[in-house]
Length: 253
Image (cartoon, rainbow, N blue to C red; front, side, top):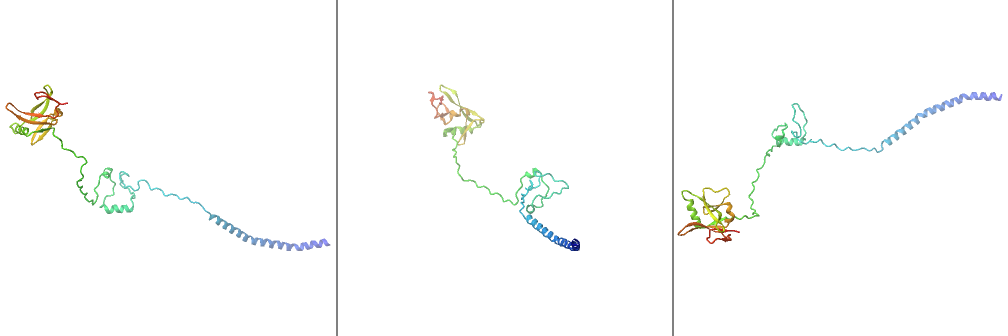
């Protein structure tokens, strides 16, 4: 009897236990979405916090302009333009406006290398001021060339008579080997000076000196002497070191 009562009480209490379990499961199922929402919000918050962390970025330097971008389109920098070529202008707007203002409707066709290298006159160029002659004295003072031979007034008058004659002649003075001392003066008449002759001009008359004898005649004085027997030209040479007794020949050391 006691066992049957306990079994009966257990069977009677079974529906109540089933209801409690069902209510507990329903309450758990109702509370689970709230837990899921709280977890999902926590995850989102965590994701946002990690997303705001520092992320390094590399700054890329600007690319260099292409080579020859600022050079006008000539035959040196580029080829000749074709017939239907639509190439964008390489010059900037500012430079283009300056060129348009200064040039009077110039053609935009590329020029050849020869025309590009030709000098062009500057527009509205002022004339260059003429350089004033410099008054600065020269560093070197050149002395006038000293004559190789001087003429006396008597020699000048005698030479003038020869030049005023119907057949004018020039006198060339030279030297030749003669006499006991070695050298003697030699005079000859010529129509025109030689290629290497040195000319001495004094008081409107001219005397020629042979270039081979110039070193022996340098510094001499030419004179004209008249006496009862002869009329002739004589020479006084300060460089003579030895002379014969008759005075016809001389030597210079």
